[in-house]
Length: 267
Image 1 (spheres, rainbow, N blue to C red):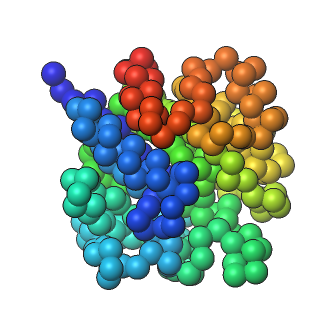
Image 2 (cartoon, rainbow, N blue to C red):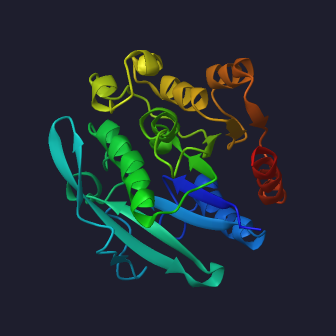
Image 3 (cartoon, rainbow, N blue to C red):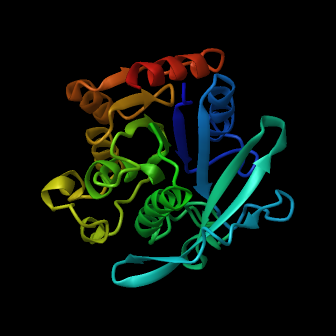
């Protein structure tokens, strides 16, 4: 029987970024799922604070070199890769000079959110999906971690739904307590547009707040996981009302098996 393929997309993975609930899960979950007999691919952004030499990142020339157009501007997509030897897994990095060269992740040294975080989220989501197409690797399931991945469910269900690689892909979205304080750029709704995406499809992010972005991710996902012990009440209520397949918060000792069981239920 052919192995099921699971694509992990996360805004943070340890050891490349400091340990948080999300970065630890995004590191050990793919390994655990691989050990349980599934094939995996893992992606994160190549922030400027990720030390390329220490982590032995190198560019994958055959995957790089595409341009993504956001708000009428071309942005070159660069793909890098590194290996976590102990886990026998590779991590792919989405890189771009305009979006991911600065030394901070989502806020500047004074704690101010970057004004272009909206475009960084668009570039990251589309960059991952375009790279997966170049790899000719059809994921049975896509698991997104963190709000920076929140556009992936929309893109899978609307913009890429005709692509044979994604036509059967199921999407799981993990909601974390990783909120941002100020709404994203007011023109966000227009910027994220692609073929097959209308204003109606994105009306939830008419005001692009963390809560609304999370709701839209839930709207287009097939299942939702509570990734942090506490998440926003409004998002919690929205998940409940959506009737989506739902997995409550899981402690460190059980989450890999619980997630794997959820995947099996969906596949």
